[in-house]
Length: 333
Image (cartoon, rainbow, N blue to C red):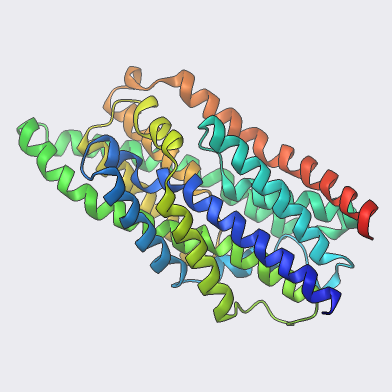
């Protein structure tokens, strides 16, 4: 078998492995509030998330094209497939570490940081598309701020609108509404997060001159969508606990407000072809909602640890990926 196809096979296996891990790592994003308020039983919530992730992953490709061409030009890289392998190994290691620790870190941040680090290690800073990479990072930074602000406003409005409603009836109504928002969030997660694995495979295909455009083949869509759905079906209980209970005590109205906020932010990013971190968006929405409910109710110590993980993910991923590439270069190139 041609060496190129062997290397590409490794890329595909690693990319689908990353997507699978992303699925159970980020399951909490869509269902943490729904599970914590008992709107759905955990296993039903996970199966709903898996199904809607699959549907969402098959619906859009814009984010995949952004990942496949904005960080660097795969057609100009000398060892593009090896760069992708290094990036995926780094991203998988970080996802597994943060999952084991129960930290809701960003799969998006680690993949983009890892890809940039591997490119720099192989080609130097000239290999990076500075404007494209900067625009992606800006989107990753701004989206949590937007989600926090919208979540705060939505919850503030809910407090005014439903001030005189019976708490029992209010919780009953919003608990039912959370089933819909969990489905919407899972769909949005699939439209954005699953695209990243698709994009990295397309990046490798273009680098190997298997294809010349950033179009996403059907087999790539299907395999990435199925891998994420399977990963989602396993669930990530440690992260669900952190997201659903440790930031602040979530009631159905709070969960609904956070869910509808994050769905709107993620879908807007997908439509505009920007990769965002669903983890960051949803966590920020929860923080915004909690702040509007009562600022002192938010456990800011836990929130601070989450923010620290956000800050360090990209630089650590860049360093690890750069090191992994040098090991690959030493062993095989």
